[in-house]
Image (cartoon, rainbow, N blue to C red; front, side):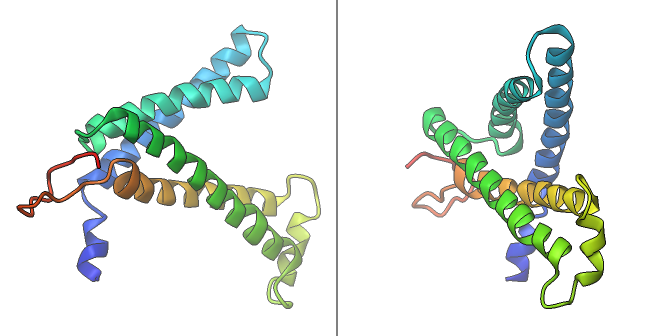
Length: 165
């Protein structure tokens, strides 16, 4: 079991994180450009930037991080589904579990933190939001590695062959 966990911390993880940093820089840069040069508001500018950055992320992770050789349409559909599930799961945990714990406590254990969530955009908001972001990265890595760009072993037991079902 420990070896299986250790195997997650290989070069693929570091490539994934590198792509993520580049993706964040491009996405946030595009959002700033769209806000400064178009009539788009923050939500449409952010959505358009996210879509473009996600397409870039798909190709970089497919070819650079995971070196996936399978069917592009199937991988693209799994990639999109993975992003949606990871986003929903991480935000549900961050905003529906972590935030209430910080602002209302759990049987009195966290009552001292109640003060930080009383104002709009209080510290609890930031902790919950950024906790969700960290969870998203972890869930997304596992989902891309084992679902979107999963490796399949061939009949001869070669685990490096990547194929579509």
